[in-house]
Amino acid sequence: MNQSKTHFIITVDTEADSEWRRPPAGTTNNSRCLPRFQELCEVFQFKPSYLLTYEMAGDPFLVEYLREKQERGLCEIGAHLHPWSTPPWDLRLPEEDTSSPYAYEYPVSVQEAKLVCLFDRIQESFGVTPLSFKAGRWGLDASHASTLGALGVRVDTSVCPGINWSKSRGWKKGGPDFSNARLEPYYLSYDDILRASSHPTVLEVPQTILPIDRWSGQIKTVASISLRYPKTNKIAKALGSRFVWFRPYPWTSVETLKMVADYVIERCMPVLQLTFHSSELLPGGSPYFKDEASVELLFDRIRQIFVHVRNRGVKSSSLSDYYSAYTVAS
Image 1 (tube, rainbow, N blue to C red):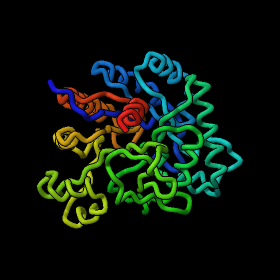
Image 2 (tube, one colour):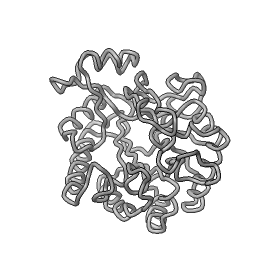
Image 3 (tube, one colour):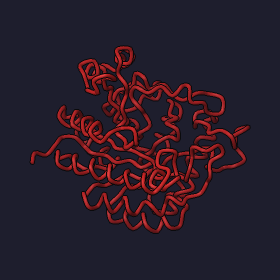
C-alpha cells in the first residue's frame, strides 16, 4: 500500500449538550460518550484533536479520561471558544442568554479575556497550553485571528470554504462569509483572513468542503477549478454545485464521503479533515442524532470512513502535528 501525501485530521468540537437550543442546555453528559469514539480511533491508530469549550474543559470525567490519553500522545487537546458560555461573566452582551454571539462582536479586550480564561482552564485541567483552535460558530475575523496569534495559538480551523454564514445571526451581526476561501492550508493575514500572509502567522487549516454537481452527484470540472481559484465558488454554485462537508451528517451518504476523500487523496491535497460535534455522540444531544439507533448509525458511518481512508494510506495527524509538518516543509 502506497503512503498518501494527504494528512488525515479528525477534529471534534467538544462542547456541551444541545448547543442548538436558545438558551443552550449547558449540561455535559456527552462527555461519557467520547471514550467509545476515542477507542475507535485507537483501533485505527488515528489521533483526534479535541477542541474543548470552557464547560467541557471543566468536566471531571472528561478531564480524567482525556488527560491520560493526551499524556500518552493518543489525542490532542485544543480550544473551542463559545464566548456566550465563557467567563468573565461581567462582560456579557445584552440579550446574550437568547443568542449566541460571534467572538468578533465583543471588543478585542473582551475576546482576549475570554480566551485567556478558556486557555487557563485547559492548562489547569490538562497541563498543556492549547496550540490549536476553532472559533465558536466559525466566527473568525482578522482581529480575532490576530488575538489568537498574540496568545500563542499556532493553528486554527475555523474557515469553511464556499460557505456563507452571513444570514446566521449572532447578537447583531451575521456570520463570516467564506464563499471565496481557499481549501488548502495557509498562514492567516491579520488584515483579511481570506488572504494568505507572506510570513508565518497562525496557520489556517480549512474544513474539507467540496463543490459537487447537484444533479449528477459528481465532482466535476467546475468544482476542480473552484478549488484552485476560490473566487469561482460563486460560479460553481450558479452552475448547480452544492458544497459537501466531509462530516458524517445523516443526509450525506457514506459513498459521497468516500468520493470526497478519494478526490482529496488522489490529487495529493495536503489535508482531509473529518469534523463533528461531541454532542452528536449522545442520543438527543444534537438535532442530527436524536436516539440510540441514529447514534449507532453514526458510529457505523465513522467506522466505514476510517476503513476507507486507512486503506488509502493516509497519514494520521493532529492539528499541531500538521502544523509541525507544514512549517518544516515550508
